[in-house]
Length: 319
Image 1 (cartoon, rainbow, N blue to C red):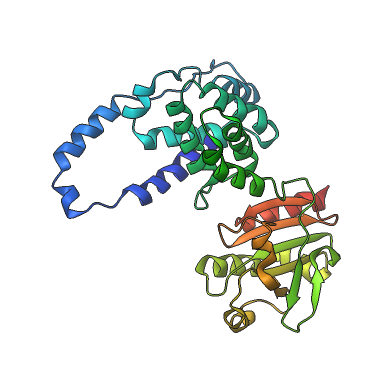
Image 2: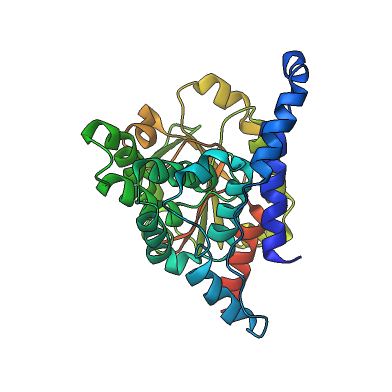
């Protein structure tokens, strides 16, 4: 499937969930809603159209550079009238479809600079970025692309010291455990009472699985890992070690669910909730997977896509 089409489908599904409910009172205002929707539908953003003769790589580079050329960053009336879901989709297609992580700093910084024509426009693009790149429930969440957005917010003359505080907090957490860099170390305690450091684990790959007992999504991720032939083979060989971390304080609930995990995995808790208190890892969304290499460098950060983890391991094994 075309990558851009796939992104459209993801965003449309998210919007359907968030916008699909209608109260009885809302039904009574159908005519007004249709009128407002018609007004919004008249205002649309059409990204730049690349020449048809471009190769795929040239198309990608063109859209990275020119995607927003048709958008008038001075027109605050437009953002007041355009359908927010339309702009959320447009932003998602750009950020996920045309901005590679390797160029995220330049591309997203440039976008936020162009959006700095007014406080209202800057706030609007901050809202789009937060919803697509930072919301815990967004499948397109990406710290590498959100970090330059946060840096722009922290440096923006539109915000005073108090307004910058939440962005400074988010930036501090986003800068932790970046892909390609060393992961933060932490202590863990097993059911036996033995305590050790994550950095003491020796393996070609370490999969940190931050989980909560009874969490439905945690159970789903658990089952996906257990059903992976590749991961099971590597676990059996000792090449991959799985460390399941419970970050909270209810140890009774944690102990009641220890049997949910294979005996070959290390199931532990973080005593004193140091991971959360010292902001060592982003715990806004659980479950969360971090894949590390033998040097404890981050290969995958804060994801739940087991297939992606498998792909990274397979690529590393083949190299």
